[in-house]
Image 1 (spheres, rainbow, N blue to C red):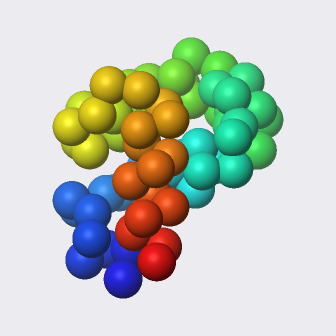
Image 2: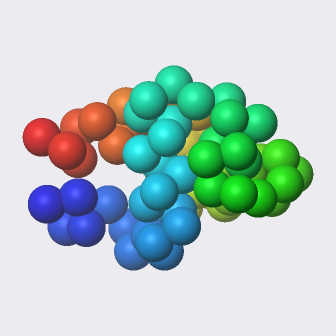
Length: 68
């Protein structure tokens, strides 16, 4: 369902979107994923662009709607 409702996300982008829906900040996402905060921030920026939204909150809303 998530894959059909969203543009083609990479597995990492889908993971980042999950953590955004959980309210995590970039530094928290970085810790969970085992990457640098800058890398997590880049993933978030790429995800926002791919979802055509401007904010993390809007991305999280898209992710939650896609979950059903």
